[in-house]
Structures are given as structure tokens and as C-alpha cells.
Length: 384
Picture 1: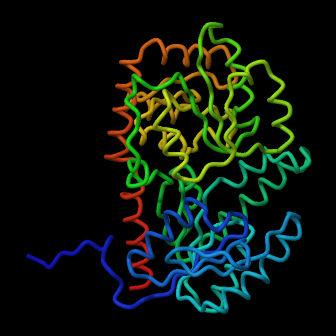
Picture 2 (picture 1 turned 180 degrees about the vertical axis):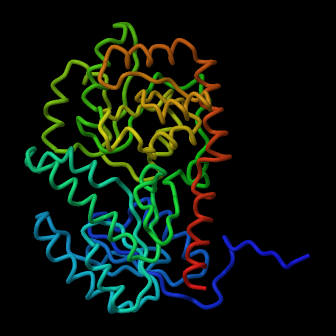
Picture 3 (picture 1 turned 45 degrees about the horizontal axis):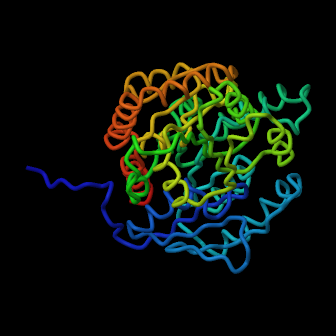
């Protein structure tokens, strides 16, 4: 019998240097640092991160090379190439793994220097552009087509493309290698705190993530007005409002009296919150960038054993109906959202069973522990 070994967990023969680069995400970003970098550090690689951070910031198991935190988007875009290349030269890594489209030209320079380069595509940028409020509406279609052309053709110059969803991967048929590494929860993180028994939990609903109109925060708060007057149901919002002035608008709605606004929570805080909830909401609007997305919050709710109330998109319907882990509604219909919330409270046994089935599905399929093996296998293939 041939000698077989698991390449997904094999320790590298030498301590290869791996450097991740981002100019958009913070240094402690969940996908970049807490999942990818800590995974490869635990596998024995020397790991580095070039990211916006304070000069005295430190990361566990990862060497951080800080970049300035630019408030001006244009200034960040034009200085990113020079700054990242300067820091990358200090590292002199064998493989560079970059995360932002604005770093494409810096990544091409690294290829010219003879480095291996991976492009990690988190979002479908052309679809995102169509919903960017700061871009004039008349300019969006042109920019979307331009960046779609650039992305599809430049991808073939890199050693590999990592796609966060199958839908994104379908764009890069010309790339040398395409690996789908989905942003699923770390089960080791989600089960670290024992939850309150489901039936004894308060009537608390939860939304975790960016708080913006296009992500449905206003519709969720409007839905609270349709709950029965004698209901003591509450909604916990965890995240930051985008833009900040939206908080003022939403807080004027009658349903705000049922809201507990918690601001940004760290990972432990998110887990503790979910372990007190009756259901988690993910009410993204039906924009091109969201319809085929796989939002981490939906799978985090499932991982915590919490039933999901989600936007009725075909892909999400396929997952939640197959796993029987939640309810689907029109995300722009506050009354329908309220009816789903009421159903959860009125059917605690069925809701608890939804949560159990969702958690089982994440344990078996939708978890980072499975996805991380693909990342390690790709690194070993590229580095030999």
C-alpha cells in the first residue's frame, strides 16, 4: 500500500514565510487574522500581516507590520502600492496573500520580483460598485464593467485565486488555480460558552454585523412595531451603523423602544449574545452582491444552535430548507419579518429543533475547520 499522508495538516518541512496584505480590513479581521493567519501559524509557517494598525499593536503568533489608518479613501488608494511594497520588502516572504482589489498592482509588482502571489477575493467587486453610495449613479455601470474586465484578465497572472463563494469562483475560469474557501464559523469558537437552555431564554432576537439600510436594519426595527403590544420581545443590535448618521434616523422609529443597541462586540461577546437568543436575523436586501452571498452571520447563528430568520433568496432557501434550520421572508416587508418573529416565540419546540438541526449542519459541513484544510493544501502545493 502506498505511503499516504494528510497534506491538509502536514507541518512544512522548512519554516516558509507567508505574508498577508490588506489596506481595507483591520488587523484583527475575522477571516484574515482569526481564521487564515492563525490556521497557517499553527501549521508551522512564519506568518506576517501588513495591515492598518497602530504602531504599538501586537498580534498573537503573527508578526504585524502596521500601515497608517487613512480616513481619506483616495489617499489610501494611491498610497497603498508604495506603502505595501515597502513593508513587503522588509518581510521578503516566499508567498504573498493579498485581500483587496486596490492592491492588484502592488501584487503584480511582487510577481515581477519573482514572488508567489495569491489573491483572496472576498466580495464580487463589480456587483458591490453598483451599490456604492459615494460613487455617482451614472458612473457605476462603467466602473463595474471596467473592474470586471480587469479582475477576470489579471487573475491569470497570479499563482492562485481564493474565492469566498462558488459564485465568485465562477468568474475566474482563466486563473491558474481557483480554490473556494468559504467564510464559515470556527466551531471551536462557537461552542466555547455553554448557552442558556433554549426554553428559558428571554424573547430576544439578535442581529450581528454591519448596520446599514441595505443590510435591512431599518426594516428589522420597523418590524418591531408589528409585534403584539403585550409582547416583551426585544431586539439586540451588535455592530456599527454605516453611515453613523443612520443611528439617529433609526432611533426615532417607534420600534426602537424594543431595541438594545450594543455597539461593536468582540468574538467572545458575539458568542455570549447568541447563546441567549431565540433567533438570529439576516435581512440583506436583494441586491446583486447579496443574492448569491453566504453571510457569515447566518452560519454563526446556526453554529450557536439558534434558528435563523433570513431573506428569501434562492441560495439561502436551498440551504435553510434543506437543513430545516430557519424561516425565510421578504426582507423589505416589516410585517412579514414580525410574523416570523412571532412564530418563533409561539412555537418554542419547533424553533429549538431548528436550532439543533442548524448546529448539526455546521458541525458536519459549514465550518472553518473543514475549509482550513483547503488553505493549507494550497500553500503546500505552491511551496512544495
